[in-house]
Length: 250
Image 1: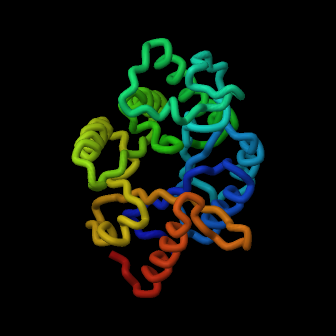
Image 2 (image 1 turned 90 degrees about the vertical axis):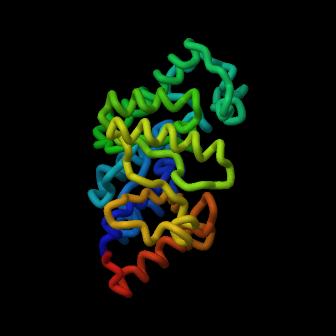
Image 3 (image 1 turned 60 degrees about the horizontal axis):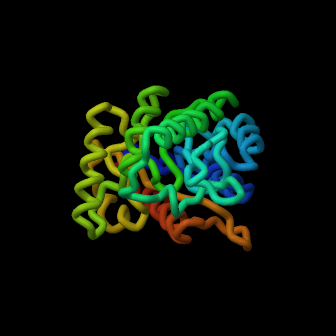
């Protein structure tokens, strides 16, 4: 059963752990998703690469650049942004208005490129670029991701495209999204959570593509869930099933 033609159902965090990997493979096999984003800086990377090569159902794979947790893949020399164990310190990286000097920008740019290169070096065909915890939408990282997307000729995930209660955030996101769209680098026309899609987005015209961000996992009982907000994957599968049962082929 195909996913509605204007929807990209993307599973983030491929490579996070074995449970997430199994759940994403299951979702591909069942036709619940048509896209995923790969973490390249986890201890499960090689195992994940083998799984991708062994399972042709896994396609539309992007790099989920991770500047939020685990270790960098480069010899990252800006130690302020790392904890005492050499892992990313998310609290220090995730500063919306923090100034980042040229040396730090260069180090982060090198890291972003290296994470993409790691996937390519393992013969993964990459279609798009996004980031763990949406760091690519922050003011001092946005241009670095645009640069990488252009260099590798990849599509880039937009910032969430709906109003979330802050006019400042909404206007900023509109601004950066327009820049991505002007360059033709956008992976979709809209980016929505499952909750917003069910309330407002499911009647979006067919000529507007929507990326829905999911985080599949199996819970302790082996049931499919979403490790970010628990309900999103279940709600998506329910919508997907009803879509086909009702013949809602817009």
